[in-house]
Length: 151
Image 1 (cartoon, rainbow, N blue to C red):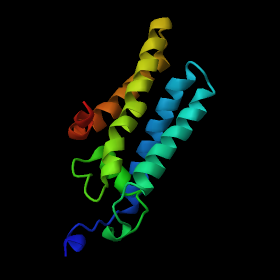
Image 2 (image 1 turned 60 degrees about the horizontal axis):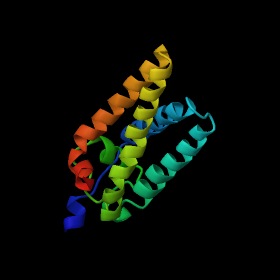
Image 3 (image 1 turned 180 degrees about the vertical axis):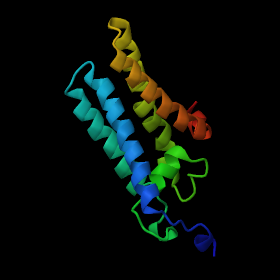
Image 4 (image 1 turned 135 degrees about the vertical axis):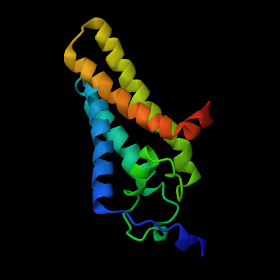
């Protein structure tokens, strides 16, 4: 009975927009890495995509039968990153991995851009820093309980 109460029905709009927002966040982080070593952006994209879409998305769901529209974890990702009630039907391993993914996606790129700004002040770096800070604050405020669990 509990399983039917927690069933989720993800709309295509929510699915596409949420995953597009996460992919855009990955690209912002890759742009920050490319400021120092352009080839490192590919490594950042590969590592981030693997951790987010495979580990958190596909392996993060407890079971697929809880969702009315099975999305193999892709509907769960926008909930996990951008909503307060996004931890339902997510396993403990994914919840423990989330703070490290958050550090990879936010703290590392923000630090790279901030250091790069000390070397040369360029408007696109400021825009990149604002974009990264916005995504990081949005996710950090929503998921502060999970993020503080590693401290």
